[in-house]
Image (cartoon, rainbow, N blue to C red; front, side):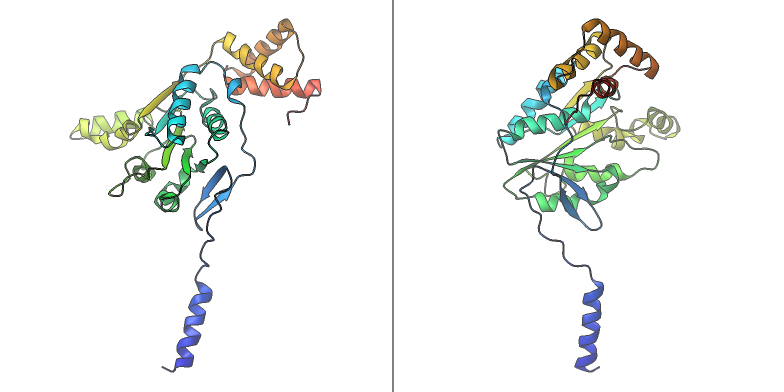
Length: 279
């Protein structure tokens, strides 16, 4: 085969091959990890609220804040699983704490990883390993269903295999489930397995690999109203306590639930009616 033919084949293969990904620019404070092609996409403005506006989760807030400060200072820190009731500020707390600590430690970055991109997490860690910055990997609404093997990819972050988890990376995940999998799935596998105690050990033990378990529980009415009053004060929405209580309780009744998310949704409606922008 002539050199000219070989050169044409080489040129054709080069055109088919994807271009190498550009080196990440780590100047941003926040990123979203995307796979296929692999890239860290900077986030210009993180959607978060101020830490002081998160009401009724003081213990979880203080524990995660101290863990994050330790990590930002280069000290040992634990992976954290924030689990419990929907709409009670789990993901809001992670983003708010990053914002608060980042103000004093600009090298603390947050990288959001979607559950469907977990199989590529090892490649993400390879980009972060050895960097001078510190990285919080954030996986929101994490859970696993029947025949879902994505949980195995998390071991690269939680245990790190033979290389170990990068010293400059910690994982914060949120979930409505303490054990990251449906209760009926756990019970079904226990009842049908030859060795029930071992049937679900691998999946259930995944949550045990988080050093911090922070529980979030439904708020009471006083906390619900305190959340709304805090938003009103922070954004300059004027309303008397009696009217606020009556309208907020009615809003909660129409939704059939009471949570931090419902409190914010009522406040957005209130701010709109009062003509107060939230930017």
